[in-house]
Image 1 (spheres, one colour):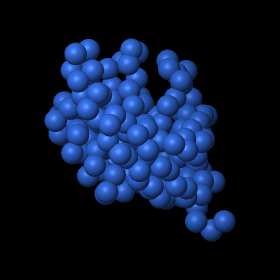
Image 2 (image 1 turned 120 degrees about the vertical axis):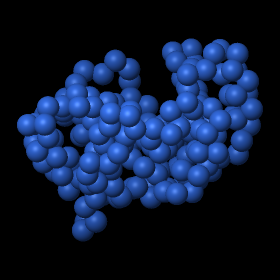
Image 3 (image 1 turned 135 degrees about the horizontal axis):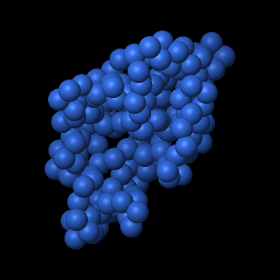
Image 4 (image 1 turned 180 degrees about the vertical axis):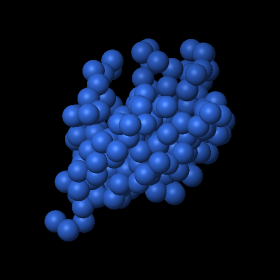
Length: 171
């Protein structure tokens, strides 16, 4: 079964992202707007308990943090993806690194860049048109992040939450 680890931002960020995604993202209906912490991976059911235990430890040593979405950017020419960029990436990068260690360690194809995809699977002409329009948008949204989620992919390709991991708020 396919699993993934994500942050779902607050509703105001999701609403903004969905205002673009419903037009420019063919995967709009498969998963809500999110920041990927670990890209989809295969996992046998017998390993699930160990993965959950690992992620509980990650959440326990993570304090809530704020991120700021500050502009629209793109990964072009590597891929034709347009996304909401995050100004202060460090806490998300640290969380990504912690999720991707131990039992979940996997060599990564690309350097990790925290982002929230708003458009994908476009031709170069579509990308130029969409990015040209969206990069002019004034984006300035701060979001409090206090949890992440382990998702699994259902047979209809939709993603759903398996478990939510709340950060340690005691510190």
